[in-house]
Every structure is written in C-alpha cells, then in structure tokens.
Amino acid sequence: MPPKIYTVSDLTAEVRALLEDAFSGIWVEGELSNFRHPSSGHMYFTLKDQQSQVRVVMFRVANRQLKFQPRDGLAMLVYGELSVYEPRGEYQIVAEYMEPRGVGALQLAFEQLKERLQAEGLFDDARKRPIPLLPRRIGVITSPTGAAIRDILQVLGRRFANVDVLIHPVLVQGDQAAPEIVDALRELNRRGGLDVVILARGGGSIEDLWAFNEEAVARAIADSKIPVISAIGHEVDYTIADFVADLRAPTPSAAAELVVSRKDELAQRLDELQARMTGVVRSRLDALRVRMAGLDRHLRLLNPMERIRMQRRRMMELWRGLTGWADRRLIVLGGELRAAAGKLDSLSPLAILSRGYSICLRLPERQIVKESTMLFAGDEVEVRLHRGTLRCDVREVKA
Image (cartoon, rainbow, N blue to C red):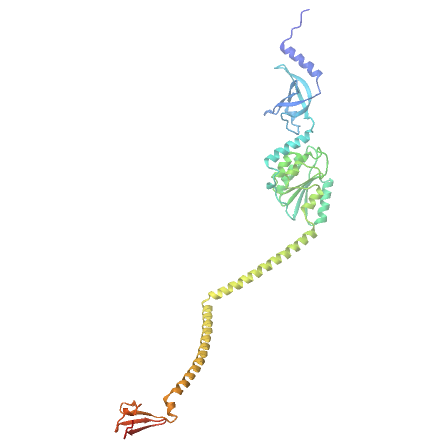
C-alpha cells in the first residue's frame, strides 16, 4: 500500500483539528512578554516559562471585558483553547479570559488606574475645592433604597433640619452603575443650584464597590464644578473615587456630619464671632477717635485764625510777664533811687546850709570864695543862706 502523501495545507488542517479537539478549555500559566495591542483591538503576546514559550492571541470581543491593562512581566493565568495559525503552521492559544497570577484582576486594575490618575495630578490637593461651611442645598447620588440614604437623611435632620436635599437615584453596583453615576454627576452640574454633592454607597466587597473604581467615574468627579464628598463603603474601604473627590468621608453618616455643622454649634460660633467682631470694631473706633482728636488738634494748629489767636495769647502772656517784670524792676529801682537820693541829700550843700552855714560867691563871676585872700575891700559878694541870699559889700579883709 503506497504511503499517504499530505500537502502542507492538508497536514496543517489535520494537526489543527487534532489540537483543537484535544486542547479545548485549558488553563495555561506563564509570564507575559512581547505584549502588543494594535489599533485593531486584538491583543498579541507570548506566555513563557524557563524552558518554553507559546504565542497567545486575545481577540477584541474577549479582551474588552478585562478590568486591568496587561503588560510585560506579569505572571498570568490564561484560559482558552489551542489552535493552529495555518498560514505559518504555528500553534497558538486563543485566549477567552485571563487574570494576574497571585493578585486579583480587580486589585491590579485598581492599582494601575490609581497610579495613572495620580501621575496626571487628579489626586493633588491643589485642584480640590473647599467644602462650604453651611451649604444651603445638598445633592446626594446613591441608591434610593439603600441604608446609605437613610443614614444621611437622619444625620442631616438631626444636625440641621433646614438644609435642602436633592436625591439623584442611581445603581451603585453592577455594569450599569458607573454610567449612571457619571450621568448623575453631569446632570447635577447642568442643573446647578447645589453647594455640594455627596456620592454614597454602603459597604461591600471590591466587586460590589467596583463602579466607584471606574475611570469614567473618577474623571466625572474631577470635572465636576460642584465640590464632591465621597462616602463609599466602610472606613477601611478605599476606592478611586475617594482619591479624586474633594473630601473623603469614611462612611455615609460621616459625610452628612462633615457637610453641615450642628445648629447649636453654629449658633455658638456665630455668638463668638459676633463678640469678637464687636471687640474689634470698638477697638478700631477708639483708635479712630484718638486719631481724629489728634488730626483735629493738628488742623486747628494749621488754621490761620487759630494761629493768630495762639500768637495773641502768647503775646498777652509775654506782655503780662514783661509788665510784671517792669513793675518789679521799678520797685527795685525806686528803692535804689530813694537810697541814692538820701545819700545825695546828706552830701548836698543845701543840707549844710540848713544847719546854719552859708556860701559866699564873688560877684560878678559868682565864684565861690574859699579864702579871704580871694577878696578885696570894696568887692561885692553874694551870700547864699539856707533860705534866701544877701548882696554885701566887703569893707575889710582879714587874713
């Protein structure tokens, strides 16, 4: 019997049929390398271990369900079937599902997205908006039937019953949750009139909370013009939404406590601020009064009439001082004059005359006669007495 001769195509087709029948629905473990993701949407990579490697293709329909981004070096667990690429005669794995080995796919996707958004600056405190002290209207995005909305409304009613609350119901779990949350954030921003938005959900597993780890939700929070408070799960639960939000609350109840102050606490704070403001105003008014008084004095000094009045008062003070000095000086001089007059009076010839003496004057030159030798018989003299004078003729002169 002659041997069967195969064409290359026949051989490849038969090998393909055998492999696909024998190796369908298999799991293969290996390290991912040579990863490519072209514009066609299909993924091409290699799984390898220390001795061997195998090519893998994951078509667009299958890889669209992946939560994480494959990259070289990851230890992967791939599920699919073995097939042969007939044009090259090479066997490969057609992957239907894969997940990281040693770490969950969702956890890896969480870390990858967190790292990427952090690098873009979406977590930076500088871009986050302040939460208003006392919002007048609060938007709440959550499930209308969950415990989160009941907790929020209860706390708001207890702390400040007057606040207005707008509830936007959404799914908070499942494939449709993220699109609904994104639409809700955009709708509340379009509507306007809100001071803050609370994005809330009760606790759960990472799968239950996954809608709040979606990139679309993170970017919708970052794009919101209204400040957003995230209140997802319990205190130990962290989602991407927590990092992007303007404020993270550990629970929905805590979010309600953070968003409004207690009414009595606020009233006390207002009283304190009023007392402080009153003190500041009074202190400022006192300082202004002192300054105004100083300016008034300065203005009066600059007024010409006031300056004339001041100079006049100064002149009167100087005049009174001068008059007083003159009076005192006249008294002193009067005393000195009386003393000098007394002294002169005691030395005056007239005083001597009053004691019985006389003065003899030779006429006509009226020269005082001090010696008898100054006269001759026949001379005419005038004798001045204490009272009156005598005209005499000299009859005889005695030495």
